[in-house]
Image (cartoon, rainbow, N blue to C red; front, side, top):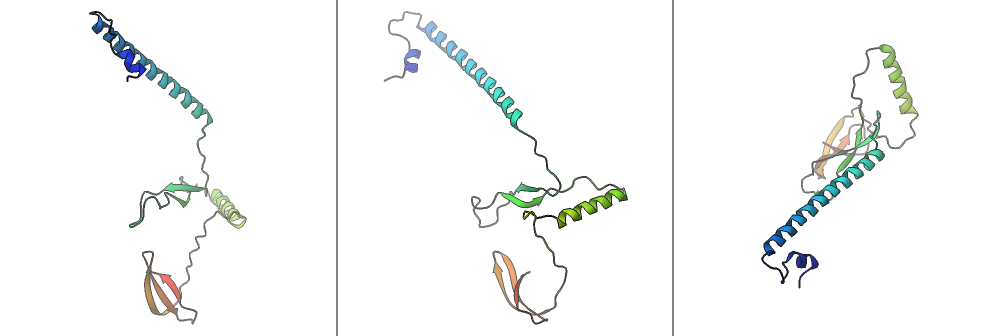
Amino acid sequence: MNLPFDASVLPKDNLSKDAKHHLEEIISNLKITQDLAAKNVKLKQAKMKERYDKSIKIPIFRLRDKVLLKEHVVPVSRSPKLVDKYNDNAHEEQNNPPADNDQDDQTADNESSDSETNSDNGDEPNNVIDDTFHEVDKLLNNRNTRGIQCFLVKWKNGSKPTWEPK
């Protein structure tokens, strides 16, 4: 059983010696329809691109905006399907160097201190680095937690022993 398209391509039974000419005509018509289809696809793609370009906006990043960075590294023994592909701990940094004018530096310092003190936004990272050092009495134990070597540390000030990374 032939499809309608197949039936139109097959030569008719009642054809004379012009069957070869008839097949060539059908093949040339197929080429014309393929060219028309390709032309229509390109026109539609151009129209869709115009509509997309009208609605799309270039993203504007400001200083200290939270951005997602794509991570290409998958930790050992982890499935790529289960690893987060984007890291949200990155912030947009200033690309240009600060101005040499002292007044500009002072206003920039004031603006940064105002934004830090008045920020009620919970999205800011809490990267507090404790620069104070405490004396260690001795190491009581060690273990690997998620590939990070940790030590149970007994402190000289008598506080409770804590697990600290290497």
